[in-house]
Length: 234
Image 1 (cartoon, one colour):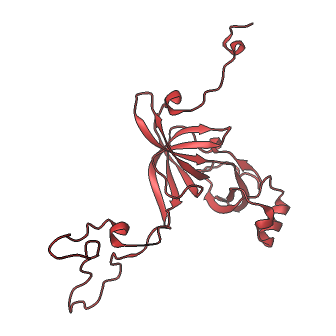
Image 2: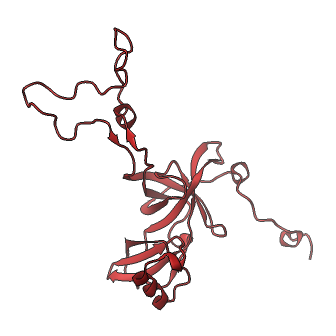
Image 3: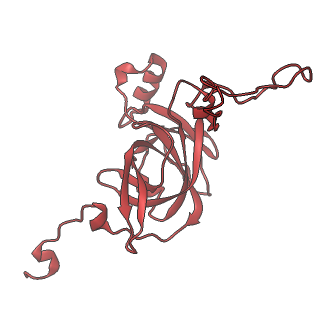
């Protein structure tokens, strides 16, 4: 079975549990993933997202046309296949409910937001210098960056101003709170790295926790029940 699933970040909201706790929630669009090829006995190439066929390079376009896929994925990634089950066929779609379920503890990997060239205070959380004693323009400066004659240079890896963001980051210990198979939406507890509409990788761990949301307070629509379904009309 697969332990990884790819989704798109939609934004954040909040939810309440039945015991009254408020949780920060990240909403993800978990559309179908598709098996593009088999890379070995325990590895698959999975596609996700949507892209127009005309916007794909010719070698990859011919590959999709021969495979007769039901949709054209925007990105491809290699994933591991756990267990002794038979590998799925090329072109098979994988739904989120086949991989994840409510209560699963997951680790989410994404690319952080790009913040351009940033100073040391924003980049590393430096305190900054004093704002008194004649120091008029050094309050946000790095400060001393090296010693005198020994070693006579700046050590590699010194935390200084530079490019900030656009790094692969993984957040562990998030909990699957809600899965909607109709809208392909999934809710996770806590923040997820990346900007809105960015792709993230959800890795399912072996750990599970019990969680029950107050769906009415959390704004989760309930399926309407008719009088016939209630048994009031025969």
